[in-house]
Image (cartoon, rainbow, N blue to C red; front, side, top):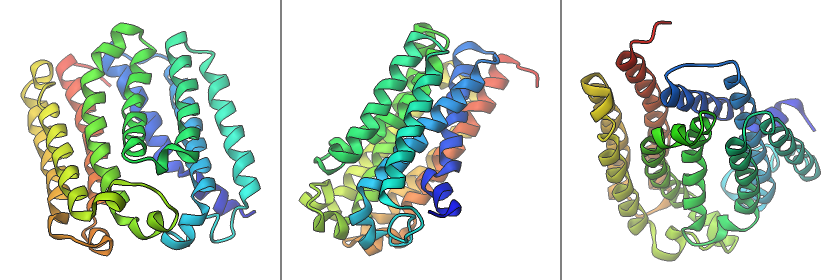
Length: 284
């Protein structure tokens, strides 16, 4: 196995950003930061990286068609190595979660199990796989809020809901990009069963739900948040509108819609952070 491949299979940037999102969630819930939030970053990083690794393990056949440059199909990482690495990462994240509180530990264990089930079973199930990924992304905010207790989870529930709909939209478009490989592997995804056109329209519907939900926090974050989130909403709406003319997976890929949606979600984290700081008068 090659070190660059081992690093790539973790998707370290995405895993680290997910960890930062959990810290942001704690900050939103509590209005402060404590040393324990470092644990949040480590736990989310390890479990997310474990999920990425086990997903590539089970997707090796599909990736030989859709993504031959990925670590396993390219030969940089062996199947056995990916399996062992995912177990180490999941175990590390769960062990660290035991040093937080019962709410965080429960979410960590549940998500680790769900990531494994997604990779080996749910991904091929109609719509369940898309909803699983959307929940896992949204649960990062719930996990961060959980460090502050049930009240913290309630405080970030709106943000979790926004994230759920935005990720569901992106997952549908990603599935539309991978129709050829998924169909060959017998995966019953929405675009395989109902076509690219229906998938694109569903994606747009869920983006509109995310946009509608994004306006709710204006009630406690005010106009600075509204100004920022409207920019983000514009980005994700443009991303969802771009594939409307598409009938084929290659067309979806050419629009760059999934990458633009990811950019919009990263931008939303920045907006959330700035809005909380301005609203609470935090000083850094």
